[in-house]
Length: 340
Image 1 (spheres, rainbow, N blue to C red):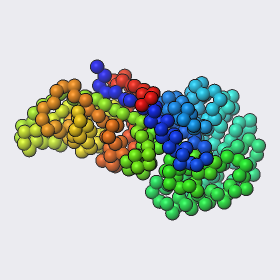
Image 2 (image 1 turned 180 degrees about the vertical axis):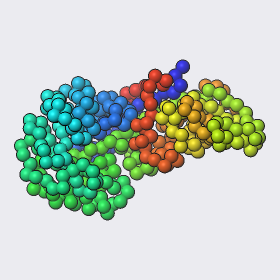
Image 3 (image 1 turned 30 degrees about the horizontal axis):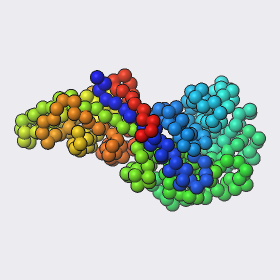
Image 4 (image 1 turned 135 degrees about the vertical axis):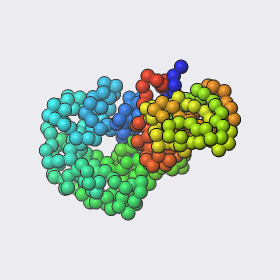
């Protein structure tokens, strides 16, 4: 028996892609599928997004792009990160990948997007050169679209002013947060990642923006036991029963991606939300129960009303880090829902 199961709802991917396209009002949607599709499966998510109307894919590295090129021979694939060698540039050229260039050296024979630093302070040119023929796009990256509207507006305007003479090139600036909140940032295309997976870029309920979570993660109660007053569960005795208390032991822990700092969050045991208590171990966690439950009772860790956004709030992090940290190895099953 697998210790847990991941469910990837490709119907939700298609729904989210259509929601974003409606919001973008004519701008293209480029699906960001780096880091194995934020842990959801790059090829499967890419196929669903393209089938719903996305027109391009974005990855972080040339190897990621090469892997997708085998699945999608004619789709535009943009490598967002820097290339590390002339060999990578040659591989990208042979595979018809498009590259982002953030410095003065523009490779020949490959389609290029020049990146302008408008305030992220990371990759990017301080000013745009006269684009040579290899340049097909101009881009930048927003630093605060989910937190600071004034700075985001400043970046949007700076990008508009710097690129207005090159409107014949594809201009793209918006990420998920900007696509949903800033109509001025949409330009010709938007590079959307987190919203495509039905996760809120604002850390709120994704339903507020019409998004459906793609990832589900379930396990089961492997043991149900009664703690008498003064008895504890887990390392460090962080949870000590004050009264007779039933707890359920779930065979998932931080090695699986259910982080150690998620103590205090809630999961669903059967149909009821229950609090995670005690120290989360490498391969087990404990939940406080109202009473004894049968071994095998389903436990929902993420999905079906258990929001990754709430887990992220408890852990003091972001959903991006949570979902990319879930291990999809041999100890769990993986199931695709095509029409969900």
